[in-house]
Image (cartoon, rainbow, N blue to C red; front, side, top):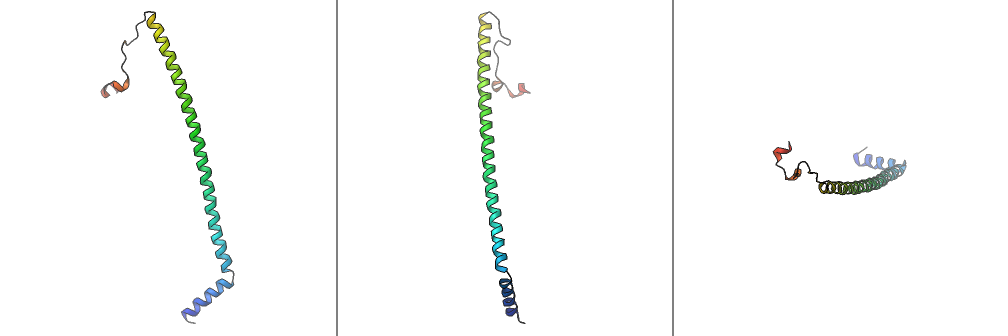
Length: 104
């Protein structure tokens, strides 16, 4: 049997013995896996969006609370100065305005 006859016999055997069904099933399986991966990715994106929204809500709540307590502290400081109490230190310097060596 020569090489071309062997190839022809192999192709005929594959096609006649369910080779087409095998190839169709193989490509169908690959397609299903891809669609499943896409569905999983979409769900992951939704989960990330939900987590981002929750984090944004927590940050907004924290900022609102921080601003509230900052106003309360400012009001108390004002009341203490009106009562003659001198703050210690009298002129505080924020960390962003200090020299780097002093922060350590």
